[in-house]
View 1 (cartoon, rainbow, N blue to C red):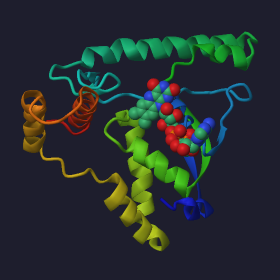
View 2 (spheres, protein in one colour):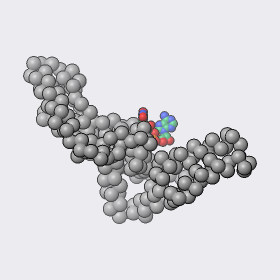
View 3 (cartoon, helix red, strand yellow):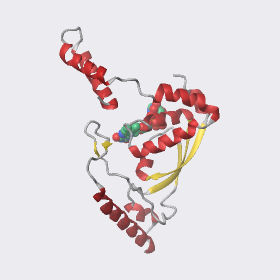
View 4 (cartoon, rainbow, N blue to C red):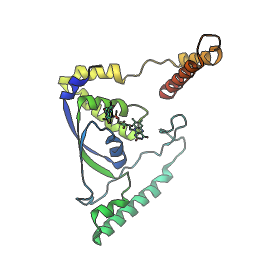
Length: 216
Ligand SMILES: Cc1cc2nc3c(=O)[nH]c(=O)nc-3n(C[C@H](O)[C@H](O)[C@H](O)COP(=O)(O)OP(=O)(O)OC[C@H]3O[C@@H](n4cnc5c(N)ncnc54)[C@H](O)[C@@H]3O)c2cc1C
């Protein structure tokens, strides 16, 4: 795909997010970053991410999570306690002349950080493709969705953003019955048609990937 013309268009965002979201974001190397330094300045009053729910581990996707059917709010209290204790340690260490670069060692990844990121449109579309996808963690998805909504409102790139949405972001129309049918056929009829063992394995892998990505 001829995407290099999009590299002439550059965006800069001032992002405030939990450190764990920043860690994921900064894996996108086609970008320039400048982050608030906890060596250079004190993080005076910590702000940390308060999840609205404690999701449970997904069974199909090893990296992912799903909503819990039971109330997990019991985790809120100990979670906040740990963060409060860490903040107390941090402040106490600074008061006792411990260096900022040392005191920060107790900073959990849910504490908010801030950075500026500059990305060209090509790299940004790659970021959005990966981070708006359901396979990405819910929290970073919220940032990617917010950026996408901003882009949709920029008059001069509306056609491109529309095409990106229609041809890259939109899910293919995978019919769940068709998937089940395919699964059935692969399991029962593969021997009857001329499919090599190797190709059969590839087909099953492709089916499993689609099923994991788009559900049954
Ligand atoms: C759902 C999900 C799970 C992930 N899990 C993990 C994980 O468990 N562990 C982990 O470490 N990371 C993980 N990542 C991060 C992932 O591996 C990528 O680093 C990240 O998504 C950035 O993607 P990118 O390389 O395409 O983007 P960029 O780094 O912005 O690069 C853009 C493009 O430039 C090209 N490019 C950049 N650098 C190079 C290079 N050195 N050589 C060749 N081509 C290059 C590639 O075409 C690349 O697609 C995960 C990402 C996602 C979305």
